Length: 362
Length: 106
Image 1 (spheres, helix red, strand yellow):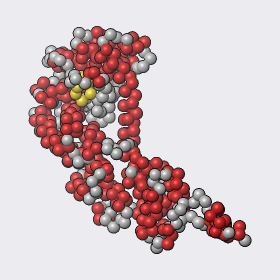
Image 2 (spheres, chains in turn orange, brown):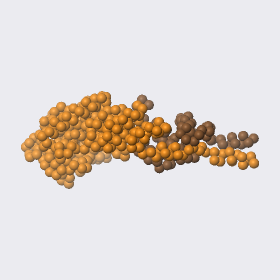
Image 3 (cartoon, chains in turn cyan, blue):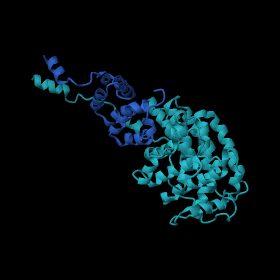
């Protein structure tokens, strides 16, 4: 009897609830803010508003997204809401509206700007031959600086850099024409980005996939920049403009040297002279091009310019990979910064690829 | 004696049972959530408490509320939800890796 009572006391002793409330709340796929208001639980109400903001932004309704985000208490979920909205608007090409959200994304502002920038589509019909190419990009630059100025110092500088990198990338890469004129006219914060982007398209057109690349390729690209050869022209390729990604590898002792955003969040060194700057941009463009062998970078491992040499070392190591005897030899170099660049390239690149994979899954 | 046997047999069960007296509905769900919150520093006890909730949706609701409240500390609860709708919420909203990273100042 005692045993029976004991079992009775515990069997079915689990905690029973009203399943309807929970299942109703969890099943909600909200389309408007008004659907979130009656939700009894504040946490679910917050993520409901995030979902509404993401949906609104994805349909181009930045105002609806803003209202949804501002309805959330300050903190993690409001920041996440602006991050989601910023990403969605960026994907639509509505970058200025996207940045309004990113500037409010607090801790996620930097990620938001980077995602928005690299999701930003090219402006249809705008290329390096368009009369308004430079004025459009300059207008965009001013607008970006104003909007990101509200996001704080940590975001505005880096954010502007990555957005201008993308704007110039969009103007040149895949357009089928690498007219250097507009890149040469670019000044100030645009100058290095213009050079990077021009080099990417010039390399794509002058050294198409499958063609062997050597030092003569670099000479041809250089001559095209200086107008000694015709403007490189060829086929358009506006989809899948992807290449090898060079992660933001900057050894601590190299941070005093100027770097500039390249593609996908990577950075490159800025040359001390115009010729070094051109050569660095071309070497980085050759690395972006899948299939360029490490041998192409080898002649520049002994270049007189430190920045060209460091860049060549990084790209040589990235394309040859860890374990290559020549890379191991470079790691023994007396030039400490050179060997640091190579070491960081080998070590940090793997980590950056993992981070990218994690972001890509988002 | 009966009381003694019941106590022995039920040892290891959560101590909170007060929510059973609350009318089923939002108030009872809230009551359960508040009980779960009291166990937030003890992952084993929290897991045990959630296992005791017989309705899948109610259990998942608490898990998601905790995960939303602090994704870094409680994001793992999303890995154990059992309903499709809760799985969808976890994937769509809480599935982004940065949300499970510690926040500055936390």
